[in-house]
Length: 159
Image (cartoon, rainbow, N blue to C red; front, side, top):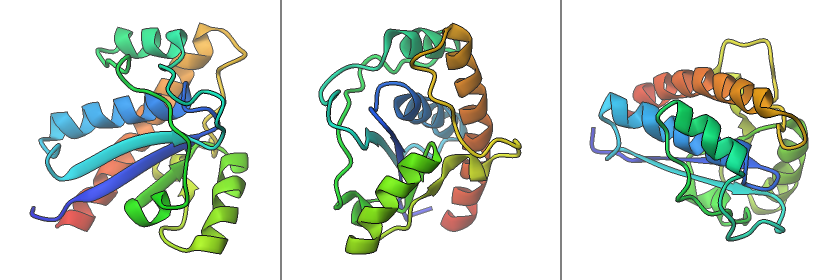
């Protein structure tokens, strides 16, 4: 596999869902031996958390699963991301609307809901920020399942 594929996960603030998705998907990619073929990043549509580490509850939930996201730092989505990534995967309908507005003006990779790659009946990754720790665990479950489906799609793309 000589081609490289790039994946961007997008949520609102880039401190809960999208860094969790980046960490979980990076773990799946490493276990599959494709880390040299897949570039992974995350960002948020909002700017208020730029430079901050992921929420401590997200970090702790990921750590329980053997995934370290503590080194990630929030950044804001920019229009150039639509040209820089093969997959622009958003967590919910509002993220989709926000990024799609930019896509309509700029072109590039069309954003899509991340959970479309999973088998769950859920369409959106719920924002766990204002809830308890169970919400972070549930988010990781959804992300893991969709990440497995995404990896299948990327393997076909790289073949």
